[in-house]
Image 1 (tube, helix red, strand yellow):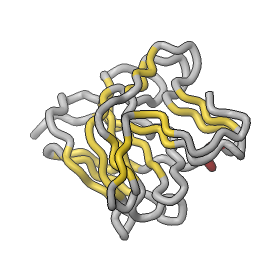
Image 2: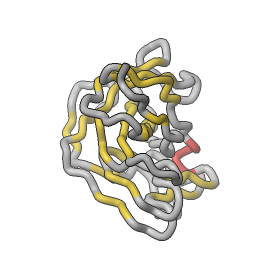
Image 3: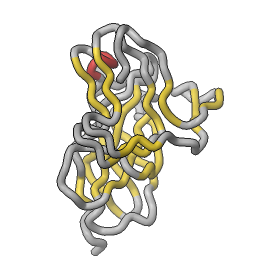
Image 4: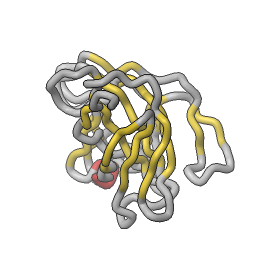
Amino acid sequence: VITDNAHDNFIGGEMVPTGAPAGLVPLPAPNIIHNNSGQGVLVIEEGSVGNRILLNSIANNGGKGISLATGGNRLQPPPDVVHLEKGRIFGSVNLATTPAGSRIEAFMNAPAPGLPEGDIFLNSGLVAADGTFDFPANFLPAGSIITATATHAATGDTSEFTTGTVLPPET
């Protein structure tokens, strides 16, 4: 739970500075946030902002994988995963709330009903000037559920997970 005006925290893999537009690039060292009776990560209250939630394995929780409440992380909206094809993930964001250079992370989940979570980190990419994104995501079995988050380039606010998009069989 991130509350009481907690801000500018990082929950995830180790970060190293780069010249990239998003400012930081994570190295693989995620937290495993599984099997909680409630949400995996809860960011609550208007003053709890700038909380980056990156590269984690968040699954099998009783509530949402990431839940933003009463203004937490400025209620950063998740991206829209438009479609998946031939090892790539395509989507878009509203540039008014998620500017170019914002980080999109994609995750694979087992085909099971439940609230949106992110079990296995697949890859990440940046939002283009036209509000779209696409990046590779290989070795995805048909029936997998793909979710994504958006982390605002300037504020560092990470969104909740998208609702899942089911990966269709290859044709």
